[in-house]
Image (cartoon, rainbow, N blue to C red; front, side, top):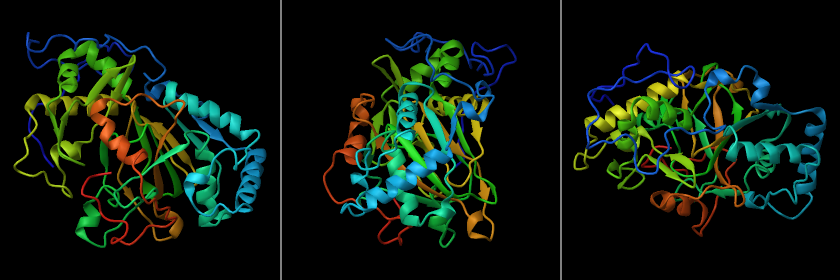
Length: 387
C-alpha cells in the first residue's frame, strides 16, 4: 500500500553508532516534541544494540550440532515416544526430552536470546532423515530448553503456523503467511520469543533478515529524538488484531520494547484498512519509514538452510523477509513452522498495553491443536490480521 509523507533522509555525516545512518531532521524540534520522552535514555548500552557488520563469522550466532548432539536428539525422541504422552506438544519438556550435553548449550543460548544479542540459529538437522512427526518432536524438544511456554497463534487454538506459498486464491496469495512477496521489518503481535523451523527452503530468496530495535533506537535518540517521542506516544491507531491506540515503543525495567507491524497501522493488499478508522499522521508515517531505513542499514542476513531452528527476541529484534521463488522439487518449496514462546524464568515484564495479546496466546484456557502439516482453510483459517 502506498503512503504519503516524507521519509527519513540519510545524511553523509558519520553516525553515532558505527555503520548506521544519521537521519536529517525535517525541521526544528519544537517544544511540542522535546528531545526524548520522560524516562527514556539517551543511549542503550547492551548486547542487544548490534549491527549486522558486528558478526563476521557464522559461528558468532549459529550453533552447528555435533554427532554427539544428533545422537542425543535421536535418543531423546525414542525415550519420549516410549512414554504414553501422545502428541500434545505442551508435554515435551527437558524432563522427558533429555539432552545431556546439548541441553546446557541450549540453556546458554536461551540466556543469550533473552538478555544477550537476542537471537540464535541451531543448525545441522536433516529433515529428510526424520518423519514429519519426529522432526516436529525434535523441534519441540530442542525448543523447550530455550523457552518452555508455547502460545496459541489464532482463535482456533493452532499452535503451529505453517508458512508456505499458496496462490490458490488471491486472498491466500496476498496474505503474509502465504505470499512470496517481500515483507517489511516488524514484530509478531505476541510472544517474547518467536521461533521457526525451516523444513525446506525456496529455490531462490527467502533469507532470514533481522535487525536490532536497540540500534534503531540509539540512532534515532542521537539524531532524531523527536521521532522517539512520536513512537512513544499512545495515539498509534492499531487496527489489528483489534482496534487499539497504543505506543510503538516502551521503556520499562531498563529495557526497550518495540512492537508494531505496518499492515496493522496502514493496511495491506490482503487487509485493507477500514475507512472509518483514523489514518496515520505524516509524523507517524515518517517514524515508520525511519525504523525501516535504519533497520535495513544495520540488518543481518542469514542464509537459511533446511533444518535450521531460529529463535529471536520478539521484543527487541525486528525481522523481515525478502521475496522468494519456489522451484518444482518439494525440497525447493519454502516451508517454515513458526511458534510463539515465553520463558517463565527469563521472560520480560510485558507492558500493560500488550498484555491482552500475550494473555490470549499464553494464559487463555481452551483447545490447542498441533498440526504437523498445513490444515485446510476451514480449520486453519486465513486470519483477519497479518501474522
